[in-house]
Length: 88
Picture 1: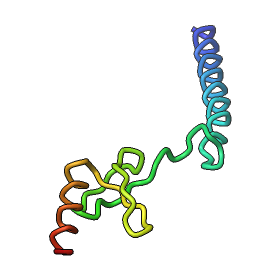
Picture 2: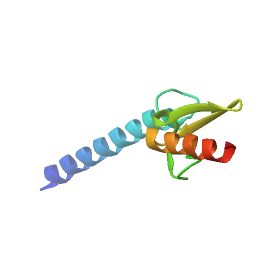
Picture 3: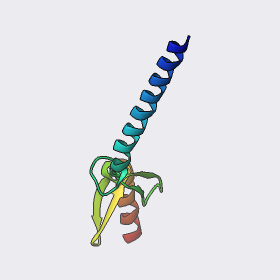
Picture 4: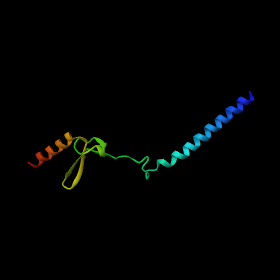
């Protein structure tokens, strides 16, 4: 019985040491300055339908020197059509 308690204690201590070692190795990787867990992209708002989406998935359009990003080509085309209606 005593051997079983010692064996359980050794297993428990090994588990705790392994867990603390792994925790120490993963804490430094959460820095945003490193490429490991860096924020991949930012969310931006579509100027036409006003939905939010990742910038990397956006459809780019340059209007009057400003960069605009749309959630889809449909929203971009609707935006262009609405600007043409305003100008006529």
